[in-house]
Image (cartoon, rainbow, N blue to C red; front, side):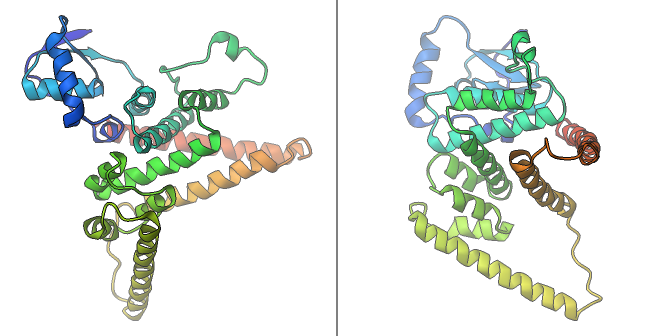
Length: 316
Protein backbone atom coordinates (compact mmCIF):
# COMPACT_ATOMS: atom_id res chain seq x y z
CA UNK A 1 0.00 0.00 0.00
CA UNK A 2 1.35 3.41 -1.01
CA UNK A 3 0.34 6.76 0.48
CA UNK A 4 1.40 10.13 -0.95
CA UNK A 5 3.17 12.44 1.47
CA UNK A 6 3.98 16.12 1.03
CA UNK A 7 5.64 17.25 4.27
CA UNK A 8 5.70 14.03 6.21
CA UNK A 9 8.46 13.26 8.70
CA UNK A 10 9.42 9.60 8.88
CA UNK A 11 11.25 7.98 11.78
CA UNK A 12 14.93 7.07 11.32
CA UNK A 13 15.69 4.21 13.70
CA UNK A 14 19.18 4.66 15.19
CA UNK A 15 20.00 0.96 14.85
CA UNK A 16 18.94 0.96 11.19
CA UNK A 17 20.65 4.29 10.47
CA UNK A 18 24.13 2.81 11.04
CA UNK A 19 23.50 0.47 8.08
CA UNK A 20 22.30 3.20 5.69
CA UNK A 21 24.85 4.71 3.31
CA UNK A 22 24.97 8.41 4.31
CA UNK A 23 24.22 11.29 1.96
CA UNK A 24 27.23 13.54 1.39
CA UNK A 25 27.68 16.76 -0.57
CA UNK A 26 29.22 14.67 -3.35
CA UNK A 27 26.32 12.20 -3.58
CA UNK A 28 23.50 14.69 -2.95
CA UNK A 29 23.67 16.51 -6.31
CA UNK A 30 23.03 13.40 -8.47
CA UNK A 31 20.07 12.48 -6.24
CA UNK A 32 18.59 15.98 -6.60
CA UNK A 33 19.00 15.88 -10.40
CA UNK A 34 17.38 12.45 -10.56
CA UNK A 35 14.42 13.53 -8.41
CA UNK A 36 13.82 16.68 -10.45
CA UNK A 37 14.05 14.87 -13.80
CA UNK A 38 11.99 11.76 -13.04
CA UNK A 39 8.31 11.77 -13.98
CA UNK A 40 7.00 9.48 -11.24
CA UNK A 41 6.89 10.31 -7.54
CA UNK A 42 9.78 8.67 -5.58
CA UNK A 43 8.95 5.84 -3.16
CA UNK A 44 10.33 5.33 0.35
CA UNK A 45 9.95 1.84 1.84
CA UNK A 46 8.93 1.91 5.50
CA UNK A 47 7.95 -0.39 8.37
CA UNK A 48 5.95 1.09 11.22
CA UNK A 49 6.92 4.58 9.92
CA UNK A 50 10.60 3.66 10.14
CA UNK A 51 12.64 4.01 6.95
CA UNK A 52 13.75 0.66 5.54
CA UNK A 53 14.91 1.61 2.03
CA UNK A 54 15.37 4.96 0.27
CA UNK A 55 17.09 6.78 3.13
CA UNK A 56 19.15 8.87 0.68
CA UNK A 57 16.06 9.85 -1.31
CA UNK A 58 14.12 10.69 1.85
CA UNK A 59 16.96 12.89 3.14
CA UNK A 60 16.87 15.05 -0.01
CA UNK A 61 13.04 15.04 -0.26
CA UNK A 62 12.71 16.13 3.35
CA UNK A 63 15.24 18.95 2.90
CA UNK A 64 13.68 20.26 -0.34
CA UNK A 65 10.04 19.49 0.51
CA UNK A 66 9.69 17.16 -2.50
CA UNK A 67 6.58 14.89 -2.43
CA UNK A 68 7.17 11.15 -2.08
CA UNK A 69 5.24 7.92 -1.61
CA UNK A 70 5.49 5.52 1.32
CA UNK A 71 5.38 1.78 0.69
CA UNK A 72 4.65 -0.17 3.87
CA UNK A 73 6.63 -3.41 4.11
CA UNK A 74 5.71 -6.34 6.34
CA UNK A 75 8.24 -7.88 8.71
CA UNK A 76 7.89 -10.31 11.59
CA UNK A 77 10.03 -8.20 13.90
CA UNK A 78 12.95 -5.78 14.10
CA UNK A 79 15.52 -8.50 13.39
CA UNK A 80 14.02 -9.30 10.00
CA UNK A 81 13.78 -5.60 9.13
CA UNK A 82 17.46 -5.19 10.06
CA UNK A 83 18.40 -8.20 7.92
CA UNK A 84 16.55 -6.71 4.94
CA UNK A 85 18.38 -3.37 5.28
CA UNK A 86 21.75 -5.10 5.72
CA UNK A 87 21.27 -7.12 2.51
CA UNK A 88 20.37 -4.02 0.49
CA UNK A 89 23.39 -2.10 1.79
CA UNK A 90 25.81 -5.00 1.25
CA UNK A 91 24.75 -5.20 -2.40
CA UNK A 92 25.25 -1.45 -2.97
CA UNK A 93 28.31 -0.35 -4.92
CA UNK A 94 28.48 2.83 -2.80
CA UNK A 95 29.14 1.08 0.51
CA UNK A 96 32.57 1.57 2.10
CA UNK A 97 34.59 -1.31 3.70
CA UNK A 98 33.85 -0.33 7.31
CA UNK A 99 30.09 -0.13 6.84
CA UNK A 100 30.09 -3.34 4.79
CA UNK A 101 31.81 -5.19 7.65
CA UNK A 102 29.21 -3.78 10.03
CA UNK A 103 26.28 -4.75 7.78
CA UNK A 104 27.58 -8.30 7.31
CA UNK A 105 27.89 -8.63 11.08
CA UNK A 106 24.39 -7.23 11.66
CA UNK A 107 22.96 -9.57 9.04
CA UNK A 108 24.55 -12.58 10.74
CA UNK A 109 23.37 -11.50 14.20
CA UNK A 110 19.85 -10.79 12.91
CA UNK A 111 19.61 -14.20 11.24
CA UNK A 112 20.87 -15.82 14.43
CA UNK A 113 18.18 -14.03 16.47
CA UNK A 114 15.50 -15.03 13.98
CA UNK A 115 16.63 -18.65 14.07
CA UNK A 116 16.60 -18.73 17.88
CA UNK A 117 12.97 -17.56 17.84
CA UNK A 118 11.91 -20.11 15.18
CA UNK A 119 10.73 -17.30 12.87
CA UNK A 120 10.60 -17.66 9.11
CA UNK A 121 13.06 -15.34 7.42
CA UNK A 122 10.89 -13.75 4.72
CA UNK A 123 13.79 -11.84 3.13
CA UNK A 124 15.00 -15.18 1.79
CA UNK A 125 13.73 -18.68 2.44
CA UNK A 126 14.84 -22.06 1.10
CA UNK A 127 12.74 -23.62 -1.63
CA UNK A 128 10.61 -26.71 -0.97
CA UNK A 129 13.12 -28.72 -2.99
CA UNK A 130 15.95 -27.56 -0.72
CA UNK A 131 13.89 -28.27 2.40
CA UNK A 132 13.19 -31.83 1.24
CA UNK A 133 16.86 -32.72 0.75
CA UNK A 134 18.44 -35.11 3.24
CA UNK A 135 20.22 -33.60 6.27
CA UNK A 136 18.60 -30.19 5.62
CA UNK A 137 19.35 -27.70 8.41
CA UNK A 138 17.78 -24.22 8.37
CA UNK A 139 20.60 -22.63 10.39
CA UNK A 140 23.24 -23.96 8.01
CA UNK A 141 21.14 -22.84 5.02
CA UNK A 142 20.85 -19.29 6.40
CA UNK A 143 24.57 -19.13 7.10
CA UNK A 144 25.29 -20.30 3.55
CA UNK A 145 22.82 -17.71 2.24
CA UNK A 146 24.59 -14.97 4.18
CA UNK A 147 27.96 -16.13 2.86
CA UNK A 148 26.57 -15.94 -0.68
CA UNK A 149 25.35 -12.37 -0.09
CA UNK A 150 28.69 -11.17 1.19
CA UNK A 151 31.12 -13.42 -0.79
CA UNK A 152 33.41 -13.82 2.24
CA UNK A 153 34.42 -16.81 4.37
CA UNK A 154 32.37 -17.96 7.34
CA UNK A 155 35.26 -17.28 9.74
CA UNK A 156 35.32 -13.66 8.54
CA UNK A 157 31.54 -13.44 9.00
CA UNK A 158 31.93 -14.55 12.63
CA UNK A 159 34.58 -11.85 13.14
CA UNK A 160 32.30 -9.22 11.60
CA UNK A 161 29.47 -10.22 13.95
CA UNK A 162 31.73 -9.29 16.89
CA UNK A 163 32.76 -6.11 15.05
CA UNK A 164 29.10 -5.08 14.64
CA UNK A 165 28.42 -5.69 18.34
CA UNK A 166 31.47 -3.58 19.25
CA UNK A 167 30.31 -0.70 17.02
CA UNK A 168 26.85 -0.86 18.61
CA UNK A 169 28.41 -0.68 22.08
CA UNK A 170 30.55 2.32 21.10
CA UNK A 171 27.49 4.00 19.58
CA UNK A 172 25.49 3.65 22.80
CA UNK A 173 28.20 5.60 24.61
CA UNK A 174 29.46 7.99 21.90
CA UNK A 175 27.39 7.97 18.66
CA UNK A 176 29.70 10.47 16.94
CA UNK A 177 32.65 8.09 17.44
CA UNK A 178 30.76 5.13 15.96
CA UNK A 179 29.64 7.05 12.86
CA UNK A 180 33.16 8.38 12.27
CA UNK A 181 34.41 4.78 12.24
CA UNK A 182 31.62 3.60 9.92
CA UNK A 183 32.11 6.55 7.56
CA UNK A 184 35.85 5.88 7.33
CA UNK A 185 36.79 9.16 9.05
CA UNK A 186 38.37 7.47 12.08
CA UNK A 187 40.30 4.31 11.22
CA UNK A 188 40.30 1.49 13.77
CA UNK A 189 41.44 -2.05 13.05
CA UNK A 190 39.25 -4.99 14.07
CA UNK A 191 41.22 -5.76 17.28
CA UNK A 192 41.33 -2.09 18.30
CA UNK A 193 37.60 -1.67 17.69
CA UNK A 194 36.86 -4.55 20.05
CA UNK A 195 39.26 -3.13 22.64
CA UNK A 196 37.68 0.34 22.48
CA UNK A 197 34.21 -1.14 22.96
CA UNK A 198 35.40 -2.87 26.14
CA UNK A 199 36.50 0.41 27.74
CA UNK A 200 34.32 2.20 30.26
CA UNK A 201 31.95 4.94 29.07
CA UNK A 202 34.35 7.55 30.39
CA UNK A 203 37.27 5.86 28.60
CA UNK A 204 35.48 5.70 25.23
CA UNK A 205 34.45 9.35 25.39
CA UNK A 206 37.87 10.54 26.52
CA UNK A 207 39.66 8.48 23.86
CA UNK A 208 37.46 9.98 21.14
CA UNK A 209 37.89 13.54 22.40
CA UNK A 210 41.67 13.42 22.79
CA UNK A 211 42.82 11.22 19.88
CA UNK A 212 43.87 12.33 16.39
CA UNK A 213 41.58 10.68 13.83
CA UNK A 214 44.54 10.02 11.54
CA UNK A 215 46.73 8.38 14.20
CA UNK A 216 48.49 5.23 12.98
CA UNK A 217 46.81 2.05 14.17
CA UNK A 218 49.90 0.82 16.04
CA UNK A 219 50.01 4.04 18.10
CA UNK A 220 46.26 3.74 18.67
CA UNK A 221 46.82 0.17 19.91
CA UNK A 222 49.36 1.41 22.49
CA UNK A 223 47.05 4.27 23.53
CA UNK A 224 44.10 1.93 24.06
CA UNK A 225 46.25 -0.44 26.12
CA UNK A 226 47.26 2.46 28.37
CA UNK A 227 43.58 3.28 28.90
CA UNK A 228 42.83 -0.36 29.75
CA UNK A 229 45.74 -0.52 32.19
CA UNK A 230 44.65 2.75 33.84
CA UNK A 231 41.07 1.48 34.16
CA UNK A 232 42.27 -1.83 35.60
CA UNK A 233 44.37 0.03 38.19
CA UNK A 234 41.43 2.27 39.06
CA UNK A 235 39.19 -0.77 39.41
CA UNK A 236 41.67 -2.42 41.81
CA UNK A 237 41.77 0.75 43.91
CA UNK A 238 37.98 0.86 44.03
CA UNK A 239 37.87 -2.79 45.14
CA UNK A 240 40.44 -2.04 47.85
CA UNK A 241 38.51 1.01 49.07
CA UNK A 242 35.29 -0.99 49.10
CA UNK A 243 36.87 -3.74 51.18
CA UNK A 244 38.03 -1.14 53.73
CA UNK A 245 34.59 0.43 53.99
CA UNK A 246 32.34 -2.61 54.33
CA UNK A 247 29.23 -0.52 55.04
CA UNK A 248 29.51 1.33 51.71
CA UNK A 249 26.89 0.05 49.29
CA UNK A 250 27.77 -0.44 45.59
CA UNK A 251 25.99 1.83 43.15
CA UNK A 252 22.99 0.17 41.52
CA UNK A 253 23.59 -0.75 37.88
CA UNK A 254 20.42 -1.80 35.97
CA UNK A 255 22.57 -3.26 33.16
CA UNK A 256 24.74 -5.43 35.41
CA UNK A 257 22.69 -8.64 35.10
CA UNK A 258 22.39 -8.26 31.33
CA UNK A 259 26.11 -7.57 30.85
CA UNK A 260 27.03 -10.53 33.03
CA UNK A 261 24.84 -13.01 31.15
CA UNK A 262 26.09 -11.63 27.80
CA UNK A 263 29.67 -12.51 28.74
CA UNK A 264 28.55 -15.93 30.01
CA UNK A 265 26.69 -16.70 26.77
CA UNK A 266 29.78 -15.79 24.73
CA UNK A 267 31.72 -18.43 26.66
CA UNK A 268 28.93 -20.97 26.12
CA UNK A 269 28.89 -20.31 22.38
CA UNK A 270 32.64 -20.94 22.12
CA UNK A 271 32.31 -24.21 24.04
CA UNK A 272 29.30 -25.35 21.99
CA UNK A 273 31.05 -24.56 18.71
CA UNK A 274 34.12 -26.49 19.91
CA UNK A 275 31.88 -29.43 20.86
CA UNK A 276 30.14 -29.36 17.48
CA UNK A 277 33.42 -29.22 15.55
CA UNK A 278 35.61 -31.64 17.54
CA UNK A 279 33.45 -34.04 19.59
CA UNK A 280 32.71 -37.56 18.32
CA UNK A 281 28.92 -37.79 18.48
CA UNK A 282 28.97 -41.31 17.03
CA UNK A 283 31.02 -42.60 19.99
CA UNK A 284 29.03 -40.82 22.70
CA UNK A 285 26.54 -42.83 24.77
CA UNK A 286 22.79 -42.32 24.15
CA UNK A 287 22.41 -41.27 27.79
CA UNK A 288 24.95 -38.46 27.45
CA UNK A 289 23.39 -37.25 24.18
CA UNK A 290 19.89 -37.37 25.68
CA UNK A 291 20.93 -35.33 28.73
CA UNK A 292 22.58 -32.70 26.49
CA UNK A 293 19.52 -32.54 24.22
CA UNK A 294 17.22 -31.96 27.20
CA UNK A 295 19.42 -29.12 28.47
CA UNK A 296 19.62 -27.54 25.01
CA UNK A 297 15.82 -27.69 24.65
CA UNK A 298 15.38 -25.98 28.03
CA UNK A 299 17.97 -23.38 27.05
CA UNK A 300 16.22 -22.77 23.72
CA UNK A 301 12.83 -22.27 25.41
CA UNK A 302 14.32 -19.80 27.89
CA UNK A 303 16.11 -17.91 25.08
CA UNK A 304 12.84 -17.61 23.14
CA UNK A 305 11.05 -16.21 26.22
CA UNK A 306 13.80 -13.63 26.80
CA UNK A 307 13.89 -12.74 23.07
CA UNK A 308 10.15 -12.08 23.15
CA UNK A 309 10.56 -9.78 26.16
CA UNK A 310 13.33 -7.89 24.37
CA UNK A 311 11.18 -7.65 21.24
CA UNK A 312 8.26 -6.29 23.32
CA UNK A 313 10.63 -3.62 24.69
CA UNK A 314 11.75 -2.69 21.14
CA UNK A 315 8.14 -2.32 19.98
CA UNK A 316 7.01 -0.12 22.88
